[in-house]
Image 1 (cartoon, one colour):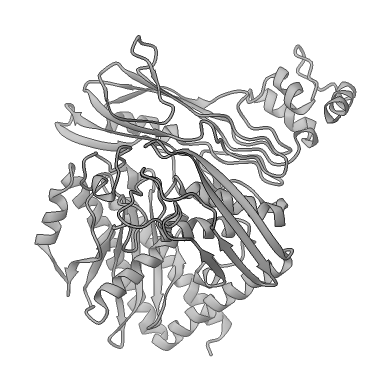
Image 2 (cartoon, helix red, strand yellow; image 1 turned 90 degrees about the vertical axis):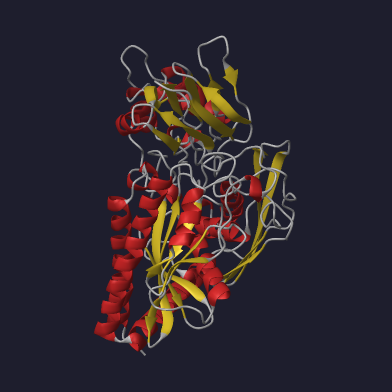
Length: 579
């Protein structure tokens, strides 16, 4: 039995290793998806000879790091006893431990006494990786072969030697091979550094102490989680979320989550969810489980370690052939956010009935825009994702307004700056800002909506768009209002203006053309009539809210000339609205 202090030192050491891996990727990768947006995650996984478990992670995107458990499991299932020191394994296949093709997982086994024990891992969103559409998001895909190159678990390094033929094959399937090579090298470097740090940990404490420390940490997390669940009221709680469309004619795709709480036991059952769809929104089981864990972890106290100790206390049932557990070759490229976010929302909607004070947004209502083309300034092809049209999804929660750009589960991501985007890509931004009178009302309001106008300059590029949150917007919780509806317009301000309500594939964007987007913000939390009138006034002074909407949404009367509160009239107005 390891002592508690040593166990915590080992736990913190593994988390520090994960953080150092993350910094290595950030400072050595090539594409802005890595070095600016941080669309990658790092962690360390433990194999006890039977099960794979997440034991440490840096600040990460939950759907990345939670689903990587299945990637390491796929590695062990594929290679078993055929693993050696110096091996590096990669996978991106959604049906072999992946989530969608864009997320590539690089793993390196670290040995002690001749056995693979720990697996440092990097999962990252690659910019381009084969398939008919640059960037992989193909709204017209009807199976996974129409999305991207499938890579099951494969060794990129074998006994320390790079498999040049395998790497050449992978790079030959990318439109930007030098960028892909650089980003992979950053991931390899992070895993190599982690191996050195882990071996130093083994040398200092010995394998038995490290293993016992990991088991202690996992047991502690499970005990704390179960103790928390035991405080929640027993019962069955059903939550639903509805996705607008799948880009191929299916509408109102539903996710149903039923949470059963009995003592310290918790299970989530997705029976009743829609069948798998023809379009690219289907969620492989690893992705579904990740979003369940994301919702659950977001309602836990901050001092509970987030690792597989929590996960092993949760039972998940997802019927095969449904949108939350499709059968191959169902397409699934969009699943990490759509319908993934709906899985998180349905889970949170169920939790709201048991613990309403902790409910809040865990999803994005994602507005996808991938752009590619040839940039004459650099004489090279570019592929990128526009994150500016998918920001602002944070809802209000009890005690806090929605804030920033990303909801809490995604705040490991960082804004790509307008200035850097204009340097690296043939874009010019005319607008990039919050919009007044778009924040969902609540005792604590959601983040306002966000408007962007982006012009193509110098060269023609190609755009693929898939828009959600038009009809089924970000939900409010505990009586808060829902978020605003999103909009997407191609060729804004011209006679060829086209409003996209669902998706648009392979649209040309010639120089001078502008895309104009409005992304609806997060939902509110709690009854708007209970919002502190001073907070309403603050929003008016900050120009988030007009005087008219302050009265309409919150019953708060503000003098338009002096911008001062009229408390007596506010009390009367709220009393009338409450009836």
